[in-house]
Image (cartoon, rainbow, N blue to C red):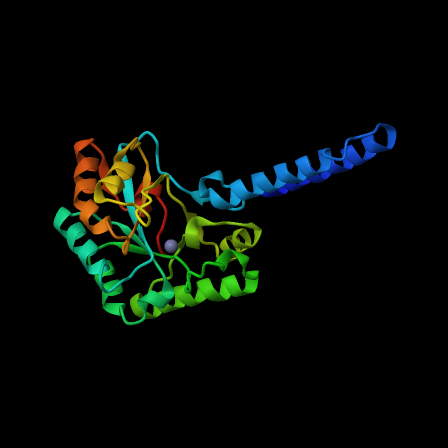
Amino acid sequence: MLKYIYNRIFFVALTILVLLMDVYYEVPIWVYPIIYLAYISISFYGSYFIQSDFYVKAHWHGDRNKKAVALTFDDGPSKQHTDKVLEILHREKVKACFFVIGKNIQGNEELLMKMLEEEHIVGNHSYEHNFWFSMKSKESMIADTTRCNQLVFDIIGKQMNFFRPPYGVTNPWIGKVVRNAKFLCIGWSIRTYDTTAKSKDAVVRKALNGLNNGDIILLHDWAPFTIDALPEIIQGIRNRGFEILRVDELLNQQAYV
Ligand SMILES: [Zn+2]
């Protein structure tokens, strides 16, 4: 957690050191852009890889000694897709976590209720799921995530504790939002790339290749091949001897406060 602060301190100190050296020795001018580029690259890595815990501590896997994994579904609820996902999970007796988008809940309240009735859990995936979410001010991020939590609370009477940032992107402000709201930031260890996959088999392959104890698998309700791939993913997980737990059970954390 807060690794970005150490990163910043290191690069500020390095720049000062090089500036001081420049007083006594001729430091080539290209050294400065190299330092800046290294700083930007590390910050970029921290933003786009939630597993780096760079700006915020993310829970992205469970116990590596226990043969269990969890399924998570982002971006719902969706009228056309979520019902089918729920149907498969019900048939296969699998409980999952849905990271819901606030604006998608309106008009789909019954799907949210169904998730709860069927013992799935829900997490906050922001209200707008705006592409520029990570560029917003801390205040508008707080307003956005609070709106999503409130909407869910009004329907199911529970305050969500789990938060997954849109696109998994983090930065110092998102770190503050998570800490202010006391959210648990939930990442993933397996990205199926189901939103861009070209076939069902590609999604199945990504989900199962290198499956490890404690893995959290990222899927999307609406993605073109997710519904077709899901039964094979569940079967494949079980064939490999893994139990499928809900992410709160896998992490031993409370989904609601
Ligand atoms: Zn999303």
